[in-house]
Length: 308
Length: 262
Image 1: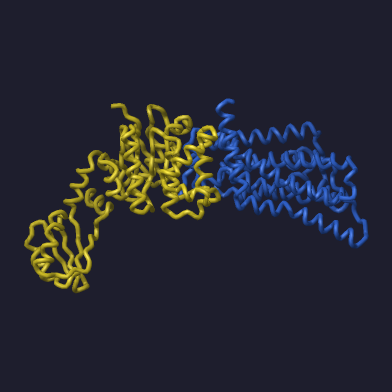
Image 2 (image 1 turned 90 degrees about the horizontal axis):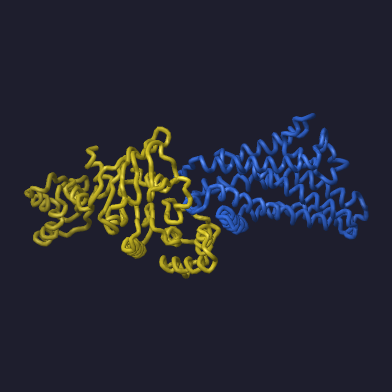
């Protein structure tokens, strides 16, 4: 298998702050998800891969070529940056066409590509509005549009679904999958596991600047499933519910919170826990106001995995 | 056309288009119209008071050195030159440019070219209008047009040279505006009045050496101690300074790592 992106002992510090440490990776064509909590080093990794910043140690190559200051390589790479920044005085149309101009396409080709890509991201009717007036979701879609407008072979997306509505997310995920089917290489980062899961099952876990795990998403899913979770249940009979749960071996602890109608249950098998929960409600005629998982986020999972 | 020149042209057209739309350009267009307003006021007051006072070309020459040479071109070059790099870094739009198949030199030179042309146009409009308003009664005196053309050329050379210097400063320093102000209104204002060879370390020295009609009367002190360089030397030095600072700006932009902070 020929690798498209390769990094070797890649490390980056910002002064005394560690951005990324000793990252050696080989990325094949297809979709690879970079997953990690905020501040884990995902953006640093992507900035190093796209040559935006210089590594302190190590190397990055794309298709066997060094990246930084190798501008000819960028006719084959599309980048969607994380930051919500634009040339605000431009319209969506002007933004895409002017950036396409930098690829040295002819004017008719620029117009055709811009028209097509704005249609894909559903900004066709808003293309003549200035970017300053766009909503967050529209700005995100525009950012995505400029990354794919020149039909690159490698698409690097830093938090591409941030600020998008569910429909927009679904559409972008579908597009990303379409590019994969065309044989392109897509590298997408997110701090939201389900977002990455919806795109790919090939993931790289980054935490505190280091590659924590790499491979199939199912393994990570399993880790999350067995990670002790605290579930808060607000209902009219928390005592009955507690007495039932305490008998289960996958329930580690039950607690009553300071509010009398709220029960806190700690479980190491979320799937079992949530499958039996409705039956208790029905059996004991319990009225439920709210169920929430207190630590159902990536940071909690990482903290658990790294033992902090 | 070689790829570098095509890239240069594309970056130039990108920023010439964008530059016209920015709030900064609109504000500076207004500022560059101040002398036109002043020219109207002077001309109307001359007409209505009946006194002839100073000639139009006398007022125009003083306006060129006091307002344009000592103030406007410095301010324009400072804000537009520094923004060549710092707008991209502070506005976090740099990624859109550096992830295109365009060399970093083409980005700097193309944007510098676009902004220099924009500022030249701004200055020309104001200068030409002021000239016509102040010399409305002598429009058939063609010797005056030579002065106008030379003034336009000197101001354009000034913008070209100062903008290149500030482009370099913008790629180099973070808080570049403050340094630019100190340079423009400190160093440039002081060093040009030093006797002997020292005054040749100011860009203003070469610009003043090229002025077709140095100011007389009240503002003649601005030419105090000027030991002019020959026109050929002055033009050579202005082009040399421009080339050196643009070269340094390109080199720095190529080597330096710009961190787009959150």
